[in-house]
Amino acid sequence: MEIRLSTSDGLPVYRQIVNQVKYLVASGRLKPGQELPTIRALAERLLINPNTVIHAYAELEKDGVIVRRHGSGTYVAETVARNTTEADTKALTGKVDSMLTDAAHLNVDLEEVMKLVRERQALLKRSTRS
Image (tube, rainbow, N blue to C red):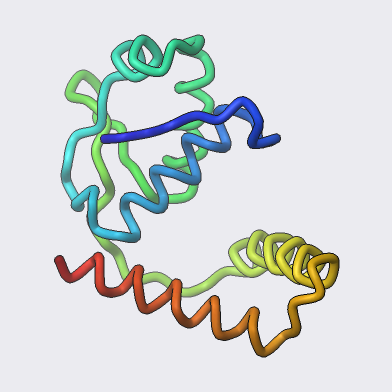
């Protein structure tokens, strides 16, 4: 599992881990049932406090991305069809608002934003098939 942290990102480290693991799962680079590094191993590899990894793993578990098996390890959750919840929609709303604000500041019109979203979705779908 390849995770890269950025000090200039502006995002907390645990959030960077969460976002990257979610991307790796969505893109198929992390497969259902695949074991993730231990908290200690990931913290040592990233040169961060283990509590940061604990925080990230807890959020990923809460979101249903990973499962922790007591005494066995942490694994990518098996894919489960689920309905979109109000909380899911709320979480995406903030991200969409942020993207649209950035686009407005960069003078990128909505059609270009939508084109970019479609291109990125197609890329993500292609990488899950690989």
